[in-house]
Amino acid sequence: MALLTLADLHQIHQNQTPLSSSCTHESEYVISSTDLANFQLLMRQLFLGLPVQSLLDAYPLMAHWVAEIQELAPELFKGSKKLWVDAPIITPLTTGDTSIFIQAHINYGLRQGIPRLYEWAMRPAKMTWQDAVKLWAVAVHYAILPEKLSLIVLVLHPSRSAQKLRLQWDREQQDQTQQWLIQLLTQPTDLQAPQIHNTDYSLLLNLDTIPEVPL
Image (cartoon, rainbow, N blue to C red; front, top):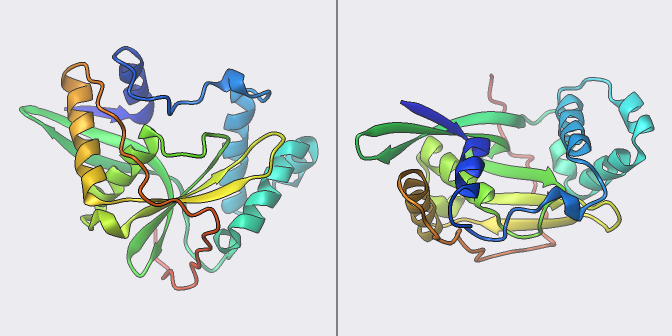
């Protein structure tokens, strides 16, 4: 049995035929990968209710990003609603006789029992293979129709305004992603990542109806 994370898949992917241009190299930006990791840590602390003001004071860019996220997705900051941040989802992948499990860390809430996925990062304003794997994993983990899933992406940038887009999922992309994972882990592949069918930069989601679910 093998447990593979997205980092493991990235390493395997880098050693094979490029999947797509979806991975953004950190050198494209003036901010370091360490600062990006620190921002993700800050967001986890923020949603856990831990004090972060000293970090916001020390890093004005991160404070600006937090303000943009609060403006674009105010529903995330309603304390009465449950939001899982960086939660590990482990999903089995059938590849013949080998037992493989894919682990993806996902931010999500439940609305009427359906996961609503969120991503906040300095990244491309388009679907990446990592997005596809996360959506695939959640669809399998919760045993729900792919068409019921979507990923809300808050795209951050050092100098431009943040963008909010919605990546819609469906059965075709679900099957294509699973096939790509199988090929990636068994043989070199140039299979393309699923394409976006619906992107809405003005989407406003309301999580008011998310029920409280105990940990």
